Image (cartoon, rainbow, N blue to C red; front, top):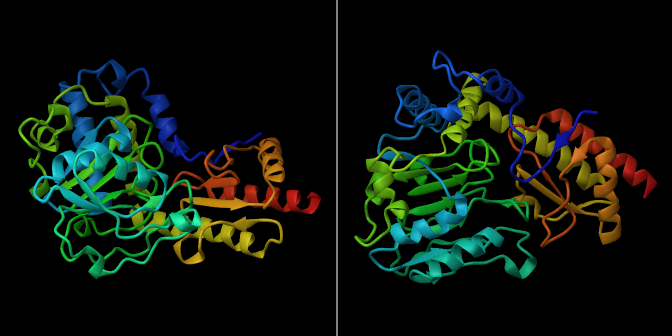
Length: 358
């Protein structure tokens, strides 16, 4: 039976990438060894490292005045690294509260400085993105933090706030590479790899050069963006194999139409599932229509016992990891770049069958 993995992360990867990694698992090129065995100082690995950065720059049209860094620790470490490095002048920042990960980022920032919350969607279980107005950002601050796509609640920003010139810092862990963005709109972008980029263990950081190197002198080296910039992300041993797989993903996307093609494909997939949800008498999409994510689609039947049965029976159709996050229940279909449209059609087929029997 063909399995469709709707996991929110670690998530499915392009089959072409996995096949190439399998071919090269034992011997990479003429090196005579696996990438996992290579010194990160070797010429073979440096070539992999530099190509991955160059291909990501092409994919996102990253301007020359931005650095691309490969860091460990996941987005969770960025919750701390961002304020350590950027909350240095005014010692405070704005954090928009739109979900659990936004709350976690906010909590870490509070340990290091002042946090202002201009808006929150917690009043309705994070089912929407609050409207953000320029006058919300008039107090002196070092940056504005947003969580671009909310993995747990299925919402996303469809437009950026006017912050009056304050740098926007964004967590793009669950939507990077899924749709076109203008990198220059942001001061810093960070993203855990395990959804649209590669295996868990790599975190991509794209930082404007004037924001790097601002950390206080007593900042631990591994928490200082300036150290990563100076050492090309190799101050210590980087997650070499994860970067190699990520590089294969970047190359794969470039060969298949880039971000524009990926966005059109993702919008098509999301539209198929949302259209069915909106026509169903059993299922209900939980996110407000105007703010719906095209990566994480959350829905419920309205009956917790029925939701549980849905998740169990879905496995018999080859549909796995469809259960919603433990904090909200229901179902969640994470349809990242590597999820084929056939997977969406298979899910809808099962949903129709389950609805007829319910």
